[in-house]
Length: 162
Image (cartoon, rainbow, N blue to C red):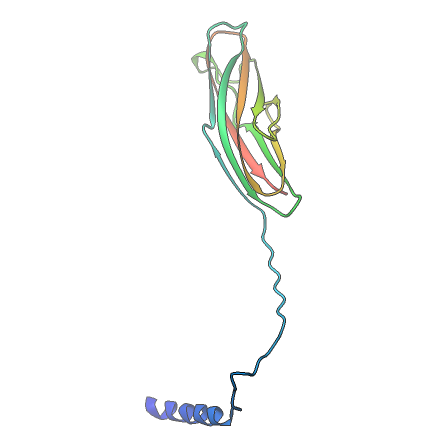
């Protein structure tokens, strides 16, 4: 029964092939095809640490923690790419005390990096670039604390391209 259904299709194909005009090697055809492709922005970010750790020996001295980053973005021509950093939670101080009085600032090393302050509730811009590409750099965080001891601060880094 299956071969009966295939038989008429083979016959139609043979008739169409016989009715096609002959093609010569010297014949040519020209045409234009317009292709439009849109690519949305895409980002990739790698950081060396998501937790800042500070060991304060003398409260009158600032201590530092460094985070290396590699930020890559694919954007439209001239679009802005922004790296931001924000607190994930309160600073944890000596003995696990949370939300201790501290001041955390940062500076950047590398093209497009910035300086700022990490405050609760709002992200700080740590880098700003224009256009696609891969950027690498370092953010150096400084802590001033009122007491000696170990301090930790989980941070969140975000790379975006509106």
